[in-house]
Image 1 (tube, rainbow, N blue to C red):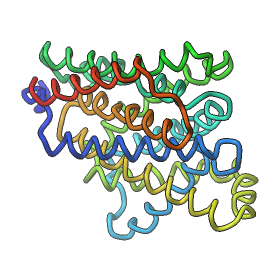
Image 2: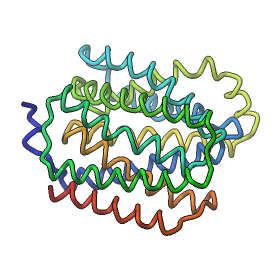
Image 3: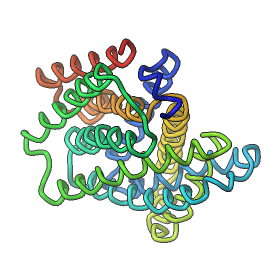
Length: 288
């Protein structure tokens, strides 16, 4: 049995850290959607995430030998993740695409973690996960019924769900095999950026031509995704993957708020019901 199996709840520190990561994730996705019609899209965010990684790389050292297979695999997976995310945001509303892409993977990741890491969760923990995911999916359904997504975008979202499950399990394994989660995430973003930059060189050129403001937004979004994923991977080394993956999807709640504020998307009764379910799920994870 995994050493984490006996601890199927989350500590206050882990909950606070993952909620902070969730907010950062929602913030960079909002920036990517806001800029989706221009060169500062999700691909540019993936490239810009390497900037803080390169800055700190001399202090974290080389990756451990045992985690190189996961690093190579995750660089390939994240190459497709950022490109497909850009395609999904180019035509779909944030309020639909984001909840669906983030809401389904935690349940699948949790089921996968029971096999890959032999993690055992209590029935109460699974109920908490289901309550949180029900709220997440309600947010997505509320946007979907408004016709804010087309068939092409729905296909991209479906593919992205599989990609998110894949990188969650690969990176949880890699972070545990590494000398530290921070070391792993630094090299993950450096390798991912290296894979993205050549195919996206025309977008990089356009971004530079747009001026300092566009470059700054891309750098901020890149820093947010670096920080968000770094915290999430650290949490996966300290708590069960299923619980961390599910709690991280409270980013959808933050995304809904940012979408209503910055993108002027409606926040009605169904979304308030979703907020209640998500809150119950978070509370349940602390008490389960």
